[in-house]
Structure formats: structure tokens, C-alpha cells
Image 1 (cartoon, rainbow, N blue to C red):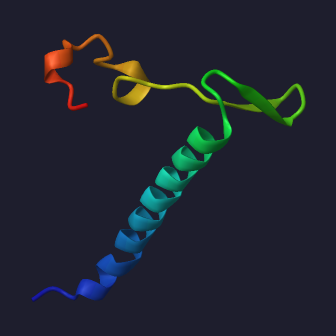
Image 2: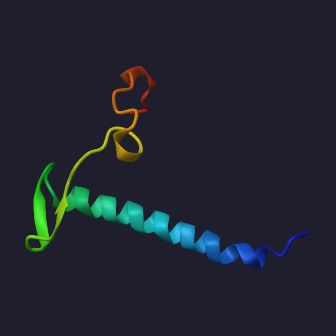
Amino acid sequence: MPDLRKFALPILAAAGIAVADQWSKALITARFNPYEAKAVIVDFFHLVHIRNTGVAFGLLSNLDPKWVNP
């Protein structure tokens, strides 16, 4: 049986990233209106609430709605 301890750090890192991702999405959804922008660093870095209906970078965003899980 392989030593499972060598997988602990990558699994914990992936889980931590997934939790942080979901937390940040919930925070933005709760505090921003759609398309609202807030400056974090003026004239350099802004957070904007945008909804992506596709997968990464909007791929498959024109998919027939019958294939989309609501």
C-alpha cells in the first residue's frame, strides 16, 4: 500500500483553494450588484461582479439551455 502521507499536502492545498474560491464568489455575490466595480487600488486593480455562464473563459456559453443544469 502506498504511503498516503505524501498526498496529504496536495489534497489539503486543493481543498483550501476550492474553499477560498467558493468563499470569494459568495462574498462578491453578497456585496456587489451585477457589473458593479470597486477599486481596490485606484487606477490599477478593480473587483467587478461578472457572471460567466460558460466554463473557463466563457467557453460553451452559447450552449443550448436544455443541456445546462439550472
